[in-house]
Image (cartoon, rainbow, N blue to C red):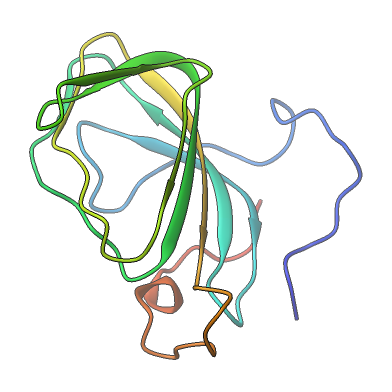
Length: 133
């Protein structure tokens, strides 16, 4: 199985926003596509105003991020990322902590490294995302 196939659709009308399990300050997500065999998924993230992500983060999967609305500040790198900014992180790349004073919406694409075999221990497969609603 792979991610679902969808014709172009209005994302505002597609799926539901839900609270991110273990998220910060009521961060919400809208899963757009999900592959249960790999754990790969695409989602929107909505960070409320006054959100702080105090942790230095890294993952065992690849992650691409595009800022759709608002901005966030990487406090360690002293970089402010605003709408239109994009990042591509390989496994174990460190990022954060973040300050999101006015709120922010991002699109994330998370996937296992395509140059390697599927890792059944990858944390993507331990997520409980389920199919988009």
